[in-house]
Image (cartoon, rainbow, N blue to C red; front, side):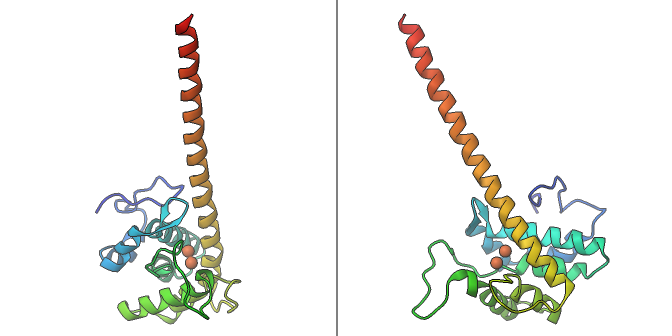
Length: 187
Ligand SMILES: [Fe+2]
Ligand SMILES: [Fe+2]
């Protein structure tokens, strides 16, 4: 297994013996469907898999802090966006609502078809888009994912914007430098 890191964290989740995070999700990380999420970009240049890993890890850390259900937090976090299509190009069928409103249910259906999950994990997955989907969370772990999912989405978009701006600034500096060299070498 290659290194796994959540955004903003230096911890390699596959080799950290201080955390039981990896043990809680290792079977999911071997699963073909979960790996398929690597094929789809989600926020900015972050893949759907990396986003789910980010959410899963920070869900886990927060629930661990409060001694809540870390297993459900980590596992449902990793599966919460298992909708398996590129939402940027997705066109809803006539009468169907936009991706933002429907993908939590779609992910839950995929998860229920392929994995054994608990009532708590179902609640975490299907309600993670609150308040876009108006269904009140039943558990405190669901409240955690509602917040963590939005936080991760924001930092993923911001990290991408920062990378784009750095690239643009570097190209501008290179262009200015080569122009200057042209001018000075012509003298
Ligand atoms: Fe989502
Ligand atoms: Fe998400």
